[in-house]
Length: 435
Image (cartoon, rainbow, N blue to C red; front, side):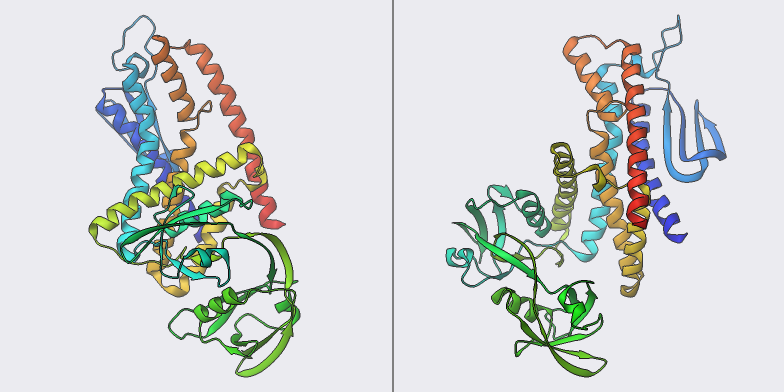
């Protein structure tokens, strides 16, 4: 129940800010706003000020901005939305998504100001791989990949997630000791093998603690459990997660068995484990930071907050693109139920790190949802802000508005289709939770 309330408050904040954008632009341009409300459902508080009713409603799941859009029959109402200049109407409609981007930026300033940003630094390079022979080294700072600018580590992760390597040359620009360099190489085709576990540990001599064991994989079959500490791999001592990562980078898993020494409740054991084939494809040959944060100065906070918002916008756009071309199915869509589930998972996972990190992770969810809502509302689909903007830009090109009745019918169809989509998404959410 707590997780549901938190999710509703986050979603309510994002939607309310969206409606606030419409409201402020409408008021600034002298458009009648009949009601601005926070929340949905029955009113629990309401007051009318200068022709606008301000309401607080029972359910914290959004908000609304009800404008006087149509003129009264036989009366020229200069305060009606549809009687305003087309560019004024465009600014009012765009105001909602714009405020979502502003909210995402402000919240990004808070997060990056506290914990910093994730530099796109190379953390390891596989010896013998083409990228190592081309000259890339640990500590280099990625600047671009195949011409796509890289400013943070997650942008590199997003590039390789959507790039689908096919054996073509990879061109990388990077910085080392203040100097810029460029390399180009052909990635190797490799087979990937898994042991089936995740681990914790860093470069400060903290033991390699296994955080999760995947059922059906070799580690589980060997009897290793979550919470066990990895001590050696094939006779090589590993003191922390960095050393274990370096070992596997230098000695990639194959079909050959490995010897693993681990500690379970203080008792050391050695087992022989044969890695399981997972997939095959092209390997970039290096790893990079995609999570670790470093602090920066005030100008850096402002700069990387902008990059943070850009990252989420681009990520959303690319995801939509994959959905359109069929590389993602509708089953990948998530709605309110999945959001509640994911927020609950994040809260539970962050509790051990303290209240600050719980709050920061929830703020990150606000950033993601706000940027996502801004992008989704700008899609040129009926009933969305983007659909209304499309009609307004057609009006600019034609020099006169589209017939209001025909436009209304198009938006009505759009609303029906969106409702059908929401039913599909809701069904996916329920199915994913239970199955």
